[in-house]
Length: 259
Image 1 (cartoon, rainbow, N blue to C red):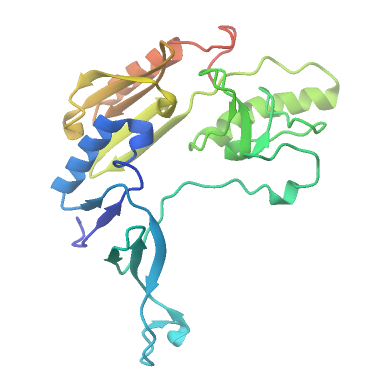
Image 2: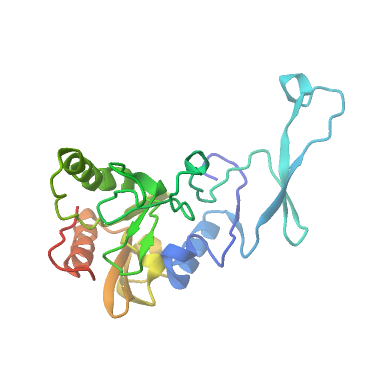
């Protein structure tokens, strides 16, 4: 909208980023976006892309051989016109090339806490293809699709791989602390830990109904702080809440350090 475009946000859930943020902060983000002129459609999913009908006038790419996008059709039949469609729907691990090797590929590649692939020798996996035990939440092996995951998991996998090749014992694995952020109209929403796995959410600071004015929320699971999200707060406050999550420790044992 800042560039003069008409923007429609189609939300598959009840609000923007509802799963990691929770209902209240997500609702506040929606209100903020609407105040900026963005139209929002909640609880819908795209089932079809629409294209312009070829009329012989070359209204497409490559001389008309590829038609231009005209919008999308939603599950309830509503058509939303658009010149450009931007998808943000997550990812699916590309493990097809590993099929037939006796590995657990049900969701990514199953690994142990040191990122060693279960069922393979001297093999590790890193990044969001790796499904490894979540020591911080105790929820069992899962994939983490955050930007820092490749580097964090590589710090664990490399020493384990070298130890295996050298015939020595792998060092005690660290417990990665996931993190993510997004910038929306010059306000930053930043999260650490695993907010999406929480069974209880509390407001720690500010008003989540007005995320542009600054807010912080804590996310608990089974009585333990497992995540925190801040909105429009300065760096020192972000670091404060990150430290709270880090200091909450892990389920598997206090001897494991954060990466």
